[in-house]
Image 1 (spheres, rainbow, N blue to C red):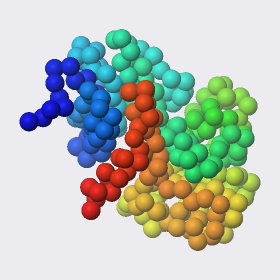
Image 2 (image 1 turned 120 degrees about the horizontal axis):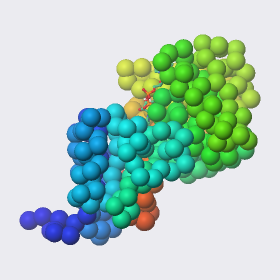
Image 3 (image 1 turned 180 degrees about the vertical axis):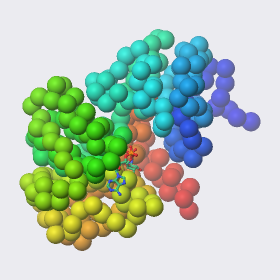
Image 4 (image 1 turned 45 degrees about the vertical axis):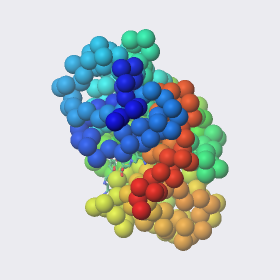
Length: 292
Ligand code: NAD
């Protein structure tokens, strides 16, 4: 018989579509159980038109918090009672907590990425960064890096529907973080990309290049990879993208894959939900055993 769930158990949940493949319920439920917390985490398949009703129900049923995934991250930020500075700038939230009936939304994708750099011995404060991409992951990283005091954020995106979003991010950061130099350039301008990579401390791939079906390719010429460059990827499937393999082969200072970003944004969410550090090592051991 299930002993953990009782009449007092607090509920948290993931909202979006699809959600069936998500690792979040397994991760949070393992950690709640490990920490002896009377909480449970579920996933609900909802789409944008369902969100207003969903969040009324969250309040009615007094859910403690949860997460939003695609395509509900933007609409969620419009329905929160309060937003973090990063969420306000980005106009999206991936996590919320219920504070006495008021919903507080935050976005931890960027903070998770930066925490993963920090765990690997890399700080962004005062650093020059090149970030490839202008989608959800890239924007979250660009905004969080600026909020955390990066000196420069050079955004490169191909000439597609995301390019305009990069220009929007630049305009918002110029207003909110005026000390940070933000530039936006088309990825097709290879000379400018080469110049920026040569001058930067940290190079980030936040495009979906490297992830299946775009695996085995990299947007960066291997000749640009040097020993004092930190290279990081958001892509975690495969665990080592072509860019990370190239950075390792070139002897770059660090070659950091996207798996840690996923883990650390989960850990930051856990802290928001419970006020506690997530038992990261224990969860990693559990995950390794499950994979056997
Ligand atoms: P998105 O669809 O919002 O953005 C995709 C981006 O990739 C855009 O900037 C687009 O211009 C660019 N792009 C796609 N194909 C390209 C190509 N052939 N050449 C150049 N640019 C190309 O996606 P997203 O949600 O921002 O996700 C981007 C990547 O980040 C995905 O691989 C995703 O798995 C990864 N991600 C990782 C984490 C994590 O926790 N590690 C979290 C979120 C996203």
